[in-house]
Length: 166
Image (cartoon, rainbow, N blue to C red):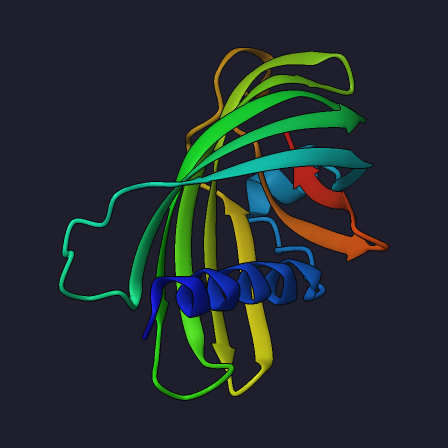
């Protein structure tokens, strides 16, 4: 697969995967259910995706990218991360994983947390999960859990973040 075609597949995969709706995760234990109430944060973000040199130059189906985001709305802050992608010979089938560290303020609570992305596209049908890595929260965001839904409409990115903080 040529590099240009692979880049186009990665871009399409990212956009299609990001558009997939997510549902909130249940709280992990009974104690948290009693003390934590799920909240929802909404806003917009900009993302810069920077291609990196592949580790395996003989396999153009594998890609590596740096992520740099600016969040606005209920979540004000930035994130930095990395994404790995894999295309296939079948049109519309691919996958990606990404990790990004978010630094900022969530409804006035300052700290950091890590988001884990797992996405696949099977012949054009996307699936995406973006979840907070357990125990990754720091500062006033310690103990945070949740899932983020990423929406792309008219070329603009937005998020809906269902979360709990003890």
